[in-house]
Amino acid sequence: LNSVNSFKMKFAIVCGVAQMVAGICCILMNSLHFKDSLTLYFVWIPEMVFMNAIFGYLVSLILMKWTTNWDSTYVLNNAEVVSIPQRYCNDELSNLPCWTPPYMENRAAVPGYGDIIGKLPEAMWCMAPGAATAGCAVLRWKDKLIVEGNTYLNKAMLDPKVFNAETCQAGIAGCSLYKQSPPSLLDTLIKMFMEIGSVPVASQLVPGQGSLQAFLILMAVIAVPTLLLPKPLLLKRRHEQKAHRPLADDHGGHGGHGGGGRQPPTYLKTNKITVGFQGLNDAYGIPSYRELNPGVFYPVTYSFLFGIMFGDMGHGLLLFLSALALVIAEKALAGQRLNELLQPAFDGRYLLLLMGTFSVYCGLIYNECFGRALLPWSLYGIACQEGERTCEVTPIAPPPVGVDPIWSISENKLGYVNSLKMKLSILLGVVHMTFGLACKTANCVHFRRWEDLLLENIPEFLFLWSIFGYLSILIVYKWCTDWVGLGLRAPSLLDTLLHMLLSPGAEVPEESRLYAGQAQVQLVLVVVALVCVPWMLLSKPLLLMHRHQVECVCARACVCVDAAVQA
View 1 (tube, one colour):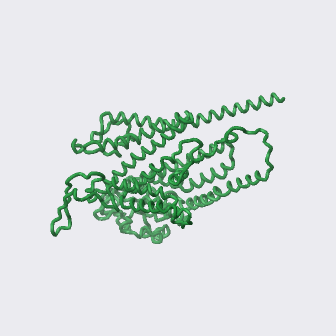
View 2: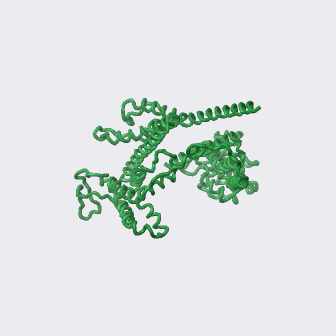
View 3: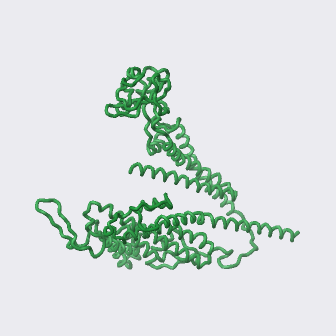
């Protein structure tokens, strides 16, 4: 589990940094296209420097750690990292550096040169009794034969005050050679900021890593004020200069609604019940003039999603009663000045009321009240023997509603409940996203934005349902199938999804097959998802770029015609 989580975390960092680099490159393209030197010098360059100085460097360390052969990397005298190839020494030790024969605990018994290494200090042998290895590394340093030691048996070898180049030069007893362990990148990153310029040799991935990290931190520190201060100050100065200029007499005159064809402002009617929900919607974005207002659906969707996350009858009832008290006393409290803790709760009293209502409802489905099962235990027979601390619980009948309370005392309660809630989250998330895309479809049809419908909305629908919609269908299908009655083991949907994405078209194993023709269906869905990605990301930008170029050509032609007429 640790290995898999470590790999996933590092892979996520690499992909995240690559995505950030792509975003910063988009800023570069815009700056060059529009000749925006201010953004180029004071946004793009410091962003690129800061990002690569910290996160790009971390990605380099991750890739370097992945590609390093740690079986052949050693630390010599706590002063340098050396590479010793994985080859065995000959009897004359003429092919140094090399390895001793494998699985020989007694170094004196090594054929050919056993007597030579047997005279070396006792610490110079990597094998311990009962712990034989594939061989100990051997090298020659300044006419001294040094053999790999075992740092687990001799921790002093890690101390550069005891074993270093000077002590080794003075005598063989001061020499050390041990295998370098893959350094922790988290510790490396923390010490990069806490111990600037200092990296122990045993933790180095590249020579001079301490100096390199000090330089990168300096560049990152310089990039922060360069990114945050110059552009705002220059824009402020430009604004002040424009503000002191006399207004030009505009004889063109702009007619039409809203002046100059600009978008009219949006006015949304609210009341004391919907104002809190509309504020939540406006925090993400205000709908344009005459667009569908998603805030209308917030009282149900937002409250229900909260109830799913906070499904507990006891806690939900407390929230409901607290909000109900504020609603009942709203006339008395409306004209008063409340404290900073009570005022936000009073402003969102109807929001809290609906959240508490749905929390009670979902708690009934989860069968939880203050974290305990609530359905009557009379549905179960509980047999407790005298002198015993445990009781046997036997179900008599299935519960009328909600999750079976027998899970509350089962050993695998956590696994079952987490699996149930995760699948519910996926289903509701897909429904939620589908509803949002349906609202976008309504806007496209109402305003006749056929480009948005064809180049954005439709591929978004296809991509969503080819992956996540298909997963939702599998969840419902798995729930509706009596696997016990069929005598089959319920397949893992996570394995099914990974197999679908990593091995498209490959035959699904018999134990993981849900229906006939599953491999062919999944191949079609993966192809559809792959086609939708460039369809969503490239089609509309290319169309808008072409349209902009055509408009520029037409504008230049009109200017030339006007100039010719005036001449």
